[in-house]
Each structure stands twice: as structure tokens, then as C-alpha cells.
Length: 390
Image (cartoon, helix red, strand yellow):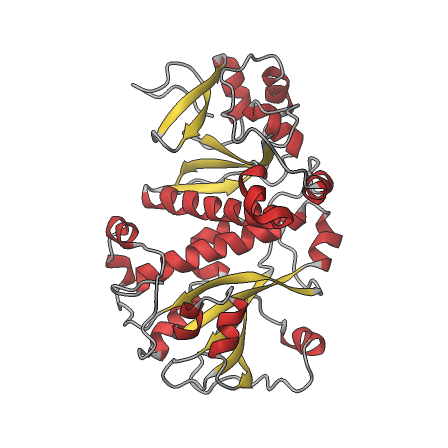
């Protein structure tokens, strides 16, 4: 959704992004007065990006797990948009007070039915850096105008037949969000129920650059690749390892500013070959003051020892001293690269208390955080590691 753009949009419009031709498809145009209502309270120059999911795109392959994978992918998209905006001198804010149905109205997908329907996920405001976004939702008057618009375009048909996944429909239904009023609230001290959300990534051993700010973003993105294999004789130095961990903290990584709640996801690390660290299972807490609560929930024989080399501001704890190559691979869908990597990371997310505090709509949000972390962790490796594949 945007105001007119020279040589692109003559009127305020809603467009759909088509990735294959890398182009915008015009869905609807609307009057200038509606745009003024829509953008009221937001910085000058703001435009909006809405994200949706079609669970069938993933369910044909993964079944009921499609709900999780689709929401992880939304987290990837949120992080990718945040990186892209930052690289161009812009900021992104997730409008967390928006209800699902209101987002659907703004995107022209309200009332759709069937296995290939688009589910409204979230709306982001994108605006020039140096300004602040004071609102967490679009005004009601603008929403009323959108109910009167006519929409262009018919979604592509994905497949001639479908399998019904009742549990996906149930999950999507109970996690649809109502309008709320706690934009930018930061909750702390939540006592979580711990649950593994899934494997995130692995890192190979390469030297970290000392001047990260001098690395051109374009060259980093162009070098980004998915890991095919790892060098199982390489070692990562402590500085690189701790530098990567530090970049996963919300106050050290601007990507996490887009997600206004949390952090809720912490890291279980299978350390195989990091100089100065014993091989074994480690816990890295991304929110301070959580150690004792985790100790109470974990096995009583875990060590909870902080390495001597660990910087004071990082909460990294050795739980088990043991070579766990094969176990790391087993948790990674039997992928050998997890055993060969210098370290492999899993995400452990708080669950019960965030849902109890905010509502069931927080369940997809937890997957968004894990997906955002996964995407930003991989790119931060690229920012920090010369020639790495991981």
C-alpha cells in the first residue's frame, strides 16, 4: 500500500508482489483522502507491506507441520524486509495492534474460503530512518473506506486436488488476532514453559572481520548461500563464536526491533570445534535473569557452568561436556553437516506464559521470532565470516 510513486503508481494503490517476474500487480486504487486517513499518525514517506500465508503451499509436502513451517517463513520474510529496508536507510515496524480481519480488508483477501485461501498474517510500516512510528494500527475510518473498494486479479490455482488438514484449519482459526491496544509493550519476567521450536542453523569455522561496519551489504547478500557441506577439520576461534552469539541479542541486532515483544527464543548449542571451549551442549540465554528458571525446568545433572573465556555480558552455560556430533545430526533431520559444523544451534522457545499474557495469537508470533532469528543469524554469519558457507 503506497501513495503515488513517480513512473510506477499514478494513484494511491494496493499491489501484490509477484516474485517470478519481480513485479507489482495492481489490486486496487483508492482516493487521496483514503490514503491520508491510512497514513495519518505515521511518518511522512511511510508505505505499508502486508504478509499472508497459504498453508496449502506447504501442507501438500509437510502435512499438519505446515502451520509451523509457514509461520517460520513469515519470520524469514519479516527479517528479510527489515534487512532490505535498513540497507536503503529505512526502518520497519510491525503493526501489532492490527486484527487479522482488518489486515485482510486492507489486502483485499477478506472472506476467502477453501484450502488455497490466503491467511492474513501481519502488516508492516516502512518509513525513513531517524523517524519514529507512534502507532500500532491503521485508523478505523480508513478501514471503512477499504470495505467499499473493488479489487482486481484472481489468485493462481495451486493444484487441482487437495488433502484436508483439519488441525491446520483449527490452529489458524484459534490464533486469528483481534484488534489490541498494547503497541510496543515490553513484557518481562514471564515464567515460560520450555518447548523446542526447531533446528535453526549451523556455522563453519572462518575468521571474523574486525570492522563489520565496513563490509558492503550488497556483496554480503550476493555471497549468501545455503550450506551443502561443512569442513569437519576446521575450528572457529572464540572471538568469532562470541561475536555471532552477541549478534543474536535484541539490543545488538536491529532486525529484532521489528518484533516488539520478547525475546522468547533461546539457543541450545551443540559445540563441536570452537577453540577454547569444551565440546558439548551449551545453553545461551537471550534474555537476562532466566538461568534459575531454566535450571528448575531442566535435568538436575546439567552443569550450568559459564566458560572462563565467556564475556561478562553473554549468558552462555555448559550443560553437558561430551562429543555430540551424531546427536546434533539426528536432531537436524539426519543431516551430516550439523555433525561436521563447528557448532549447531537449536531454538528453545517460551510458550505457556506468552500465550497466557497476550492471547492465542502469540503462538504464530513465536514462530515468527524463530524464523526472524534464523534468517538474521545466517546473514549475520555472512557479515562476520569471510567466505563462509552456513
